[in-house]
Each structure stands twice: as structure tokens, then as C-alpha cells.
Image (cartoon, rainbow, N blue to C red; front, side, top):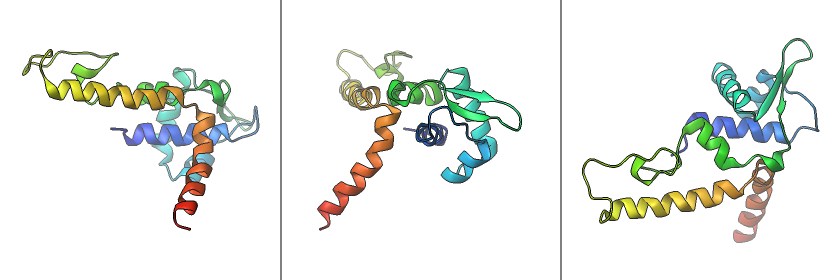
Length: 149
């Protein structure tokens, strides 16, 4: 499950992705626009900077911006950095696999189902970039309007 940390991090990155190239945004600005507690966002942006997703500059002319184009940042990578593995259980994880103590992996139907869940989640998140994620909102709203027409 995506935590608030992961959700807020993605919201902040999408916000930065929509800025003109090279423009910086203050933490207060990002927090206010996305209804994120500033102190929590400070910590999240620090992790995103350490992972190479954002760059920061201190001072009066400071702020945050994406470290590379939004088309090159995959949502799955961001989620793994902020929230850890995509798998619902460690026995279904590719990055942090741990065997279960209470079952036989070869015959455990729950594990096999969770492997499918993990694969489906990874398939969507690993092929979607921040740029595409920013475009999804317009597409989703348009689709819903057509459904209700």
C-alpha cells in the first residue's frame, strides 16, 4: 500500500514536473499547493534529493526542481525509494525477498497470488513516468465526463 510519504512525494514531483524547465519552487509553495505538511515535505524532498530525483538550492533564490526530465523518472522507482518494495508480502518481493516461516513457497496459493499482484503493480508503475502521470489527471477527468454524459 502506498503510504502518505509516497503519495506526498509523488504529488511534489508532479508539481515540479509541471514547472517550466529550470524553474525552482519553494517548499512552502509545493506544500500549500498540494496540502502537504511542510515539515514532512522537507524530509521527503531530502530523500528525493539523495536519490537523485530533485536538486535543491539554498537561499533567497533557492528551492527545488527536478534533477532530470520528468519523462525519465519512473513512478515505480520513486515509490520504491520512498516506500520500499512494491510486493504486499516479503516472499513476493524481487528487491527485498524474505521467505515466509509459515508456508511452503512452492505450494502457497497466497504467495502465488501476491506475486501476480506485485507484477501487475510493477507493470503499471515502472512504465509510467512523472510526465505521463501529470497527463493522467486530464485524461481521467475527460473519461469520467464521457461516462456520465
